[in-house]
Image (cartoon, rainbow, N blue to C red; front, side, top):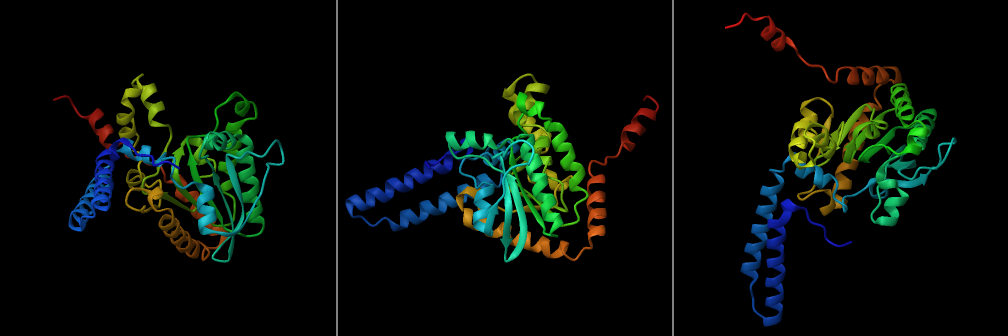
Length: 330
């Protein structure tokens, strides 16, 4: 796949082009420029570090959508062994925007599933750009109930702009399918670890997003609406997309501060796509850590903790507003 760069990466790309030109000049002229190369490489590393430590919310959204970013199947293949994909919802069809099946995580049987995007036009059409239909959520629920039947932990990976909003999806009751998943996920007596690996869009993400631990990759995002959609609604102009992204508080640090996720999984410098093997190894280590903790919890207590976890989300304090209303005019 051709190298794909984002607008904020322009200074890095410029320095990398200079590095290639200097190497080509050195080879052509047989001149030793090792000192200059080392200095330029140091400059590239410093520039990259400075840029990625100061990304805006919109920069992170673009990074989460990077076409070379690892997808669900990439993580399954890199982390798990003996993956057996299961198909169909036993009602309508097999939605390839949602994939999953049995696998082993360090010899431990698990059920792993998630939304899947494509790499090119053909595969994107096959996977519907990662936007699941109702049958995708019903397939996911079927697999998760199967895991619970055999007392196996569940791992879900979220990377979707949202559930598919087309006519056929509505005709087959996508809202009901997501709502059913939300209800049923609270009742499964096995550990559930949710990981947002890229885009976490609206109810399409939440349909497989109820769990005992919610992890998010450093440059992923999780939001009730896309920044473009928010800008179109509030400002009637998509030119305000960056402002909308900041207002939505959709980045990993914002979500951690709000108590909507439990942990931020660090990515390699430059994003997960720059070093997929390291990213997969880091994620595997975090999964194993949380699984060890959750397996010590009794099933009844697991359900109770999961319920309390989500019931405490979204709590806010209105005291200051009440005081302002009751205070006498100056």
